[in-house]
Length: 251
Image (cartoon, rainbow, N blue to C red; front, side, top):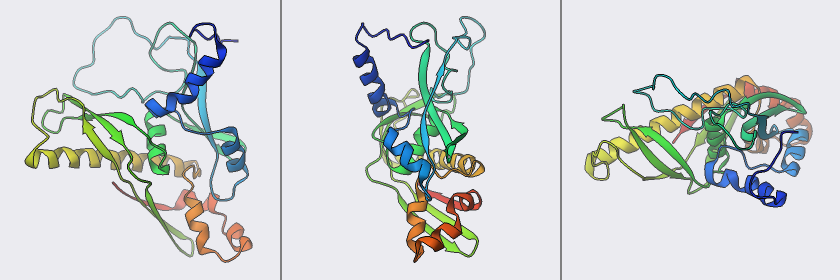
């Protein structure tokens, strides 16, 4: 009832823009109905979908004290919670996580972007990093994923260890502090800060997905290669074991 497109009068154009949104923001996952259906039946990964909701615009504050000293990400919200006013009430933002055919949790925009990085699906995104020398200021980065992550899975009895190595490239878009981070040791300082932030974000995401027992990354596809038969793999029950796996992240 609330789906009232405002981009002209052409419904097909509005739907087409929705499809390309994840390419530019990475706040919604790249998933098709075919992907969702196959993952729902899979024994080595769990399904996920784009999270949608209706925004009543109550989170938009027209007046009040301004928060100082903390950089906020535009992706820390869930669908239906974005602080905005006017326009289309229906919004798609974040990820709906499934266990089989049941939805068991949600990822916000930032967590969705991190999940795309872990799957190797990130094309391009913008990332606000706290200035290492001036934490009250922000350095916006243009992030790309030059290659797919390396994933290794070690299984020893009931103990499962997942080694996830992520590759990222970044370009500096602006430096509010005017500190020259593009040269010498300061470049290393900025790179280390970005690596640390990306690693921490991934580790929090992995903990959240393990709590839901939802391998939305397809790590099970790597793990199943260690089993000689389908029966052995199904008996191992990867989708339940993932919740107790140890995930080591390297960026």
